[in-house]
Length: 607
Image: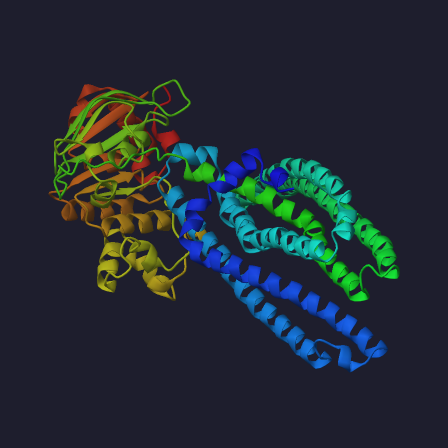
């Protein structure tokens, strides 16, 4: 049976857990040794019970003078064996189960660490719900295999070893009676094992689909409700849920068949022992105690057969779970962190783009093409362009959230890839277009990178982001819980909170990706004036679609279809009467300086 359960790919998958288990080898060896001792005392207790039964027969027929050991001595020996077996079993189970818990801890830590360094391409292939299923369900299956499967394995190894040895010692002829049943058991187990492997893989995939569907639906619950799609989503979930249920039923059917047939095989063996063993007793070849001893040993031998279904299920599901975990462990980070150790400790903020292009994985058309741009340290740069022109992609290259496909990006004269990622992303504060807030107090969100900051510093950052008055209106002020993804805040409040989180770092380089789109122009003017004073000698790069925002910058970059098509100050670009001048004219005519319109309204339709 072991060959069928631990064959081929399943064994290869499970062997990948060995490096994780190696540090717990002493606990595992101690547990196995304790189980060995427990089995030894168990067989000894059976032997003593058989002696006791025969001793009672002798006492009844011939008197106490014919006894080798008294009934009291045998009784105390049985009690001692039972107690010692109990102690050894408790120690062994505790050791093995602690290994299972420790292993699951290590696997989750590695999974979380692996996910942290992955990029956008990884998350486009494996959804958040799927990752959560692997972190919880799959690791739990592996923990069960270690905590319970090892115990089953020990039983399936030691039970035949001790029981068959003891039975052969007592009566080889009676032992051979059960041999014909064993091939049938192994053939049946082999067939069921292969079927269980397929259903286990399908079941885990369906569970991942269910988790992904649930996570996406709940994340977008406001959109679902706004579009009155609750009934449709319930129907879609019902279909996904039904597929999971059907996969679970398929596995349950196989497990139920194994659970039903294995006891039948055991009963056939017991019947054979009764018939032939009774014959031997009647002819005086073995004693009644020997027959009882045989039955006890047979039950020990049949114990693994009865639990074979559970063991096979554990092995199959754990093998599939291991493959799914190592799919994440084996994924190479899209952004390699290989610093040259020759870069300056403090970044000044001078960037040089040289014939830079970028193409997203699994696409052919470049998003950025032949970008040549020099940004002086301490300069204020603004970037504008219609949707899809490559603005956000360009900003992500500064902190290597994306990797350059072609060309070069230099930072202070060094290739940006020569810098440690931690330094790059610590000294370049980037506020993304979609502000993400954690479901924690406001002060924790603003001071996310250093929770130990003084409250005064946090308030100063909130003031710079025009957020102080808003916070003071909340009853709990800085201790206000913002809810998951900042659900209790308005769009403008979330953007200003994210801005405060970036400003508090006082980094040499600040990148703002359209973070004023939900802020009114009066508040925007207040923020920009504070920014200008705070960052006089520091590099600031921002994306916006409002002329009122762009005009404060030293230089404005106009992008279209992945290229830089115009560059200059506000006055220079207006005089050129190009794309930027059209944008300025459209916004002036529509009164966008005060409207706070979205980007689709602000960009001329002909661009």
